[in-house]
Length: 88
Image (cartoon, rainbow, N blue to C red; front, side):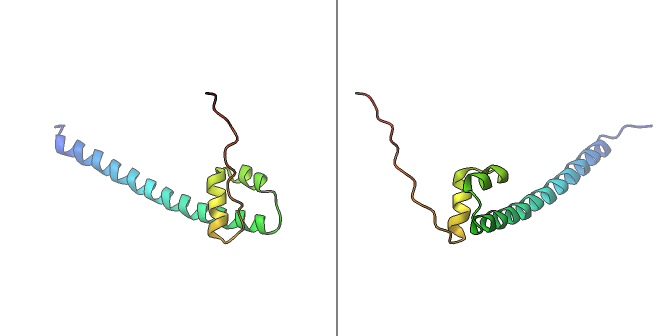
């Protein structure tokens, strides 16, 4: 059997295309799940769940969680100024 470089290239490109398609589908799923998570986090806040617990369970940063709350019209207190002092 003769090894034809173009066939190997075509096989390699098909594999790239297949994996890229799977990746795009996974990214869409992550986007949908993130939207669902955002709605669930806001709903948990609306019923009085502790925000720290919501954040821990959601696995998101405080900035992300409070951004979700702000976008949903939930009250978020302003961030406190840093209390650390520098030495001269």
